[in-house]
Image (cartoon, rainbow, N blue to C red; front, side, top):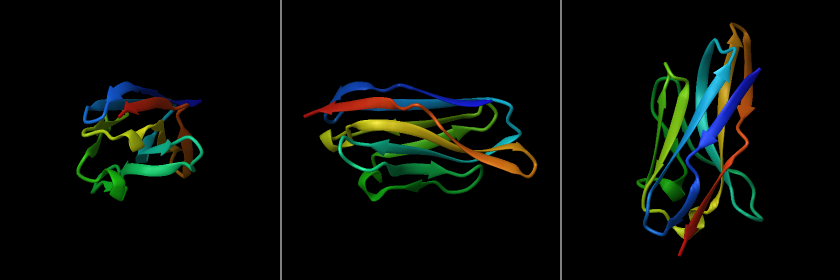
Amino acid sequence: QVQLVESGGGLVQAGGSLRLSCAASGIIFSINDMSWYRQAPGKQRELVASIPRAGNSNYADSVKGRFTISRDNAWKTVSLQMNSLKAEDTAVYYCNADIVRRPGLTETYWGKGTLVTVSA
């Protein structure tokens, strides 16, 4: 069984910062892409940022220059540093990972989400 557990959400004023973290646990051979998605009330879930095991990260246009995604392959974690937060960043943030359970078997997992609320 694999679990992704997020932490770091909360309430912050506009212009402030938060750091989200996500840790993967369980039987894991390796992890390919790790990503953060978010879902605001009444909206569809959207990709915020993704980072491959090695290579360049990818960001939604709405967060470029404000958010930074990083990962630690040894600790099986992914983080999202969010700066200059805006009210429109308010959402539940979900961790996502493509996990190689064994060679030839890759599965996608989701965390349960962590709420980020940005007050204007």
